[in-house]
Each structure stands twice: as C-alpha cells, then as structure tokens.
Image (cartoon, rainbow, N blue to C red; front, top):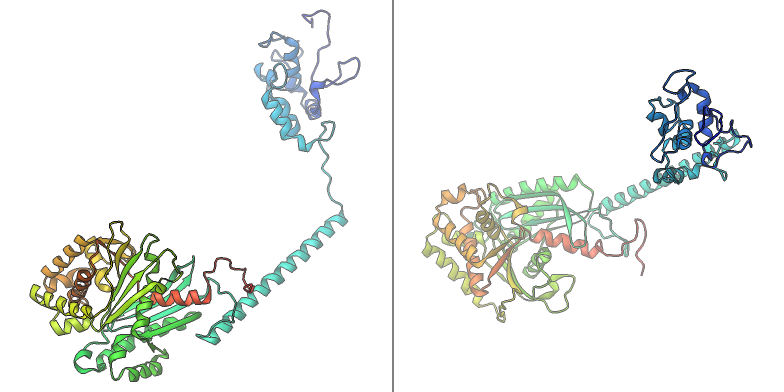
Length: 521
C-alpha cells in the first residue's frame, strides 16, 4: 500500500518487529510480548473488514495520523474495534493492558495499568516467571505447618484445662473469696437474694463495664412473709410456707449455674419476728440456702449502692428512700467536690422507719381508703420523721438536689403515669417525675376503688391493697424534703449486694491484666 508520507511500506500483519529493518523493537511495545503470541495464535483476528486478501484501508484518527491507527490495529486494540473486527477470545493479563487506545503521550488508563502490573514484571518489563517450589521445599513447608498446628492445639487445650480448673475451685469454695490479688473475669456469675417482708427476689448477674452488670437470671414473687406480724409478733405458718416455696425455686436456679460468689439476706420481717431465727434454720434444712439477717444501717447502705449509677455528676444532695413491706430506709447523701467511688460513703444521715406498706395497710386498711384515712397514714409517718435529727437541705434552683425512690410504690406510680399496657422495667427504671406529676398520680390512685386498682396492669390484685399505704409514706417524705423532681429506680438491695461484691473482688478495675495473670502490686 502507499504511505501518504511517501514511498511504499510493508503491510504489517500484527508481528511485533517483522517489518523493522534494524530489528529493533518499538519503545511503545515494551511489555507487550504477550500480544505477539496472541496474534500468532489468532491471525484471522487481524484481517481487515473488507475480506481475505483485501488491503486494509487506512482510517485516520482524530489527529489525522493513519500510522498511529495502524499501530493500534497491530496491537489488537481500539482500532480493530472501530473497524468491526472481533477481539481475541483468549487474552492474558499482560496483553490485556495493551487494549487501551493511546493519544499523544501515555493516557491515564495506560499509566494506571502499568502501575497495576508493575509488581508482576521484571526489570525490563517482562512478566516474572512463576516458579513452583521443589518437592523438598513443599515437604519442609508442610512439616512447619504441622508443627504450628500442634503447638496451637496444645495451647488451646492448656487454656481449656486452666478454665475448668478455675471453675472447679470456684464451685468447691462456694461463697469463699478468691486468692488475694487475683482478678475476677466477666464470665463469672454473682448472685444476690433479698427476702423481705413482702417479696422474695433473686438476681444472677455478670459484670460488664465499670459499675455495671448484665442480668443473667432473675426471680421475684410476692410472699407476704410479714403478714400478721404486727399483731402477733410471729411469722405465720402460711407465710413461712409461701416463702419456703419461693426459696426452693431460687435454690434450683442457683444450683443450675456456676456461681462465683453469692450473698443471701433477710430484712425486717425476720428482724422483728420472735421466730425469725427458727424460720431461717428451717430454710437451711429444706432448701439448703443460708440467709443472714442484716441490720437497718446495712440495709440503707445497700439501697444507696444499688442506685449509685442514677446519681449524676452535677448532683450535690440526694435523699434516697426505700419503702419496704415492714420498714422504710431513708438516707441523706451530700456530695462535695471530691466524689468517692462508692456513693454510700457520702451518706451523712440515715434512718429506718419501723413502718412499711404491709404494716401500715394492716393498721389503717388497704381495701377501701378514703381521703381522711389516707391523711391519717401520712400524719403517722410524719410523726416518725419528726424524730429524725437531720439538718435541712437548701434546695437550689440549679437542680443539684432531688429525691430517689427505690420501691414498688414509686415504680407503680411511674407505670401508671406512663399508662403502660403491662409493667416494663426498661421504661420505668431511671425516669424522672416532676412534683406535680407525683401529686397527680397519687390523687388518681386515691380516687380509684379496690377493683379499679386491681385491674390496672401496673398494680394488679397483689398490690391493690398496699399501693396507697406506700403513697402515704411517699407523701410524708415529700413534705419533709420538698423537691421539684424525683427519680424512679427499679432496683434496690439486690443490686446493692451485687455492686458491693463485684467492687470488693475488683472486677471493674480499669487496668485489668489478661486472663491468668496476677495484679501488680
């Protein structure tokens, strides 16, 4: 064919350097050796569109340079595609880089492809030959892999044996303490049981973040252990049977798990009853659970420990109260600039009133409560609070003082306020009630008869005769310490027991070592 720039030139058929007189390869064809073998294997792919034996008609590109177009056709690239020629079906990764059309200089796709395949080429742009390891090298590699797997298996077996050994030592020690200085680990479980005048409650929990834990199992039942105690001074046989039946369920739950440490307590009903110790001996014989009777000060401190996470950093004064079945604990907390890790260390004054929802409702009646009867209950509790020697708390407008209520009375008020279809602890625990909202809820409950209170899903028939007695105790506390708001806590002694046990064992220390290591002194 005639070249426009003068003279006859050979028709290139795709060979890389067949037409060069000097035998040198073009600089632009570096690294394109894969294209030669491809073109040789598929000569038909470079036939022009006019048919076999017909000379290729030069097509000028945008720059008007037919020679540049011919080079693209020789590479099997964009030029061939413009003339309707099929692309080769077999294309290796190196040759694929040459299928990108070039303009003057290197285009961006070309530079990207060169960078992409740079690690697969030698110093002269040739593809690196893939060398397979010899038989001896393969055997050596397999031997090293076998040794590594054996070492990993021994390590895992040793860790499992150590874990089983720790669990066996924990189960044999029962409630004993771990060796001094050794860390506890989050998978170990703690248990707390609170047998009160009205309820029997159990929590099994697992420590998580500092100051927090996850509940693994829980149990709660109204047993009314203190029923008739105010009149007779003794625990009735029916009440003891109800309590022992609930304690059997708790014992079954505790035996089904590996408990690291537990604490089981009894409160006001067993403190007051003349046959309280006799009852606890019977509990040990029939259930295997050994309960301890705690004093009122310990009960107040445990209630504070259980609610410590609900006291914000901005708070400077708190009155925390726990309205129980046979007694009501009240703690005055003053927090200065330096806050202790345990909120109970900030208690300045505390008292335990010998009155609760069970005892107060038995004296004044709980089924049909008139406004006059309700006011009589409030005045009785106010007389008890009048004998509590405690300095007045100045309520600032900055919101640094508030009340915290941890009992069934305040959680019931919160559930009624939220109009829950059924009681939900997640929606109740930690919410705030204003002073007006508390007054409104108390007035609503006082306007209901016994059947209406029993029909409410947040009260139920078991608490319908006790809730107004609890509201009377709450009203006396609010009159003694007026506060613009109150925080509701669905927690109490069990949470305080768990918090103290976990803190004593150091499970929440910030700089914990890995498993099996000792604490640095």
